Amino acid sequence: MDFGLAVNVDLTVVWAFLIAFAVFAYVVLDGFDLGLGMLFAIAPEKRDRDVMMNSVAPVWDGNETWLVLGGGGLFAAFPLAYALVMPALYAPIIAMLLALIFRGVAFEFRWRTVRWRPVWDLAFIAGSSMASFAQGVALGALLQGIDVDMASRSYAGGWFDWLTPFSVVTGIAVMAGYCLLGATWLVMKTEGDLQERMRRIAWIAGLTSLGFIGVVSLWTPFLQDGYYNRWFTGWGIGLAVMVGGAVLLVAWRMFHSLNVHRHEYRPFLQAITLFALCFVGLGICMWPYVVPVEVTIWDAAAPEKSQIFMLVGALVLVPLILAYTAYAYWIFRGKIDPEAGYH
Image: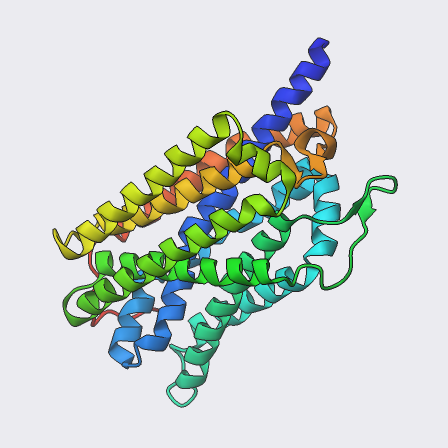
């Protein structure tokens, strides 16, 4: 292997981890406010809804920055993967984007009207639910595999290949997980009756999420031979036991924090840790493929010079994004004042 190829391999791995980090940041940060939007459906009182929305008002639009970074990074650093994945997942991706648009408009407009507020609240609930479900469906469709014609380097499947029982299950699983993040966020940010209600909802959402984690984890190895061999042969067995054990341990600590010690901050951090462990399991399952199990990250990578050029920009932008995100969360830390408005 010559020096040029070594550099190319290193840059490709760097970009793979950078995009994975952006996706994880989006899932966690936008996940809790999507979950909060779905929880609107079981908080009909105007005062509670105002408090819930005020808790994410300063940060919700910044959370979606990571979606742009992840999608743009995939297009720039792995153009072949983008060209294969997008046609396969047009329907759920378009549904997600339209849902995010309706959700964003509803976020602003519900404060400007009294007569139409119930309509915008419904749009907020529906947009949050559809965006969450579409993201889970897209994940499930990617995991189950995309039909690729490698001779022409193009998508060879049909319009509805993404719609399967597995992708529907992963869609519902993501909705449950986001509700867990949203409920634990509200436990941290609210007080009184609303906080107690969210503790109970977090418990239910946590059990539901844990159940779906088990179902998806047991189903996934049977989707592709490569997945099965990764988890159930050799060192993979020990790895599966360690990841599964860590998930159960973190889940137990989260439930303990919710109902026994009644912590306010720990359940949210533990829910994030639960997502991180699931993300690690997903990464182990897919590595080194960007389109399982057809195209590796090296097959899909952009030319070396393009990766270097983009990496210079990323090294400037990513720290800036992290800095202003951390600053925003620090400034708006603490409990939400029920009497405060969003302007």
